[in-house]
Length: 146
Image 1 (tube, rainbow, N blue to C red):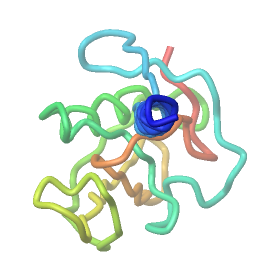
Image 2 (image 1 turned 180 degrees about the horizontal axis):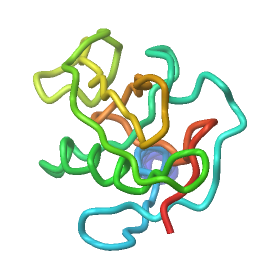
Image 3 (image 1 turned 180 degrees about the vertical axis):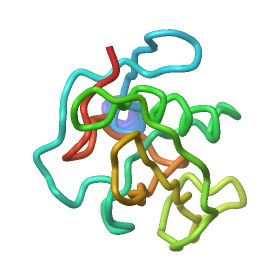
């Protein structure tokens, strides 16, 4: 009986550990080249990337590639008619909760990029989270670079 209880406890511990690991696995992203993510879909959500409450989750901080992943994402975008975009980092803003904070638990900051293309009347703000991973899509109004 003691042996059965021990086996049961080990089974429970290892099965929970496996589940936890599978939940924490980052979303897989493909690279078109070393500087560009391969995007295959345009979001239907009008807030995706345009709101600090729904930032684009490129991840990478855990691999020391956070800022690079932000650029890889932006390099995959094109304007509404395929125009080449230009962008610059406006700065950090908007604290959000993330368990990927390298300093421990608590808030991390999003990065805000300003994006424009030839013929656009204004720049667009894009909010990017380099701490957490998510499925990458082009925001509404953008296309995917060829």
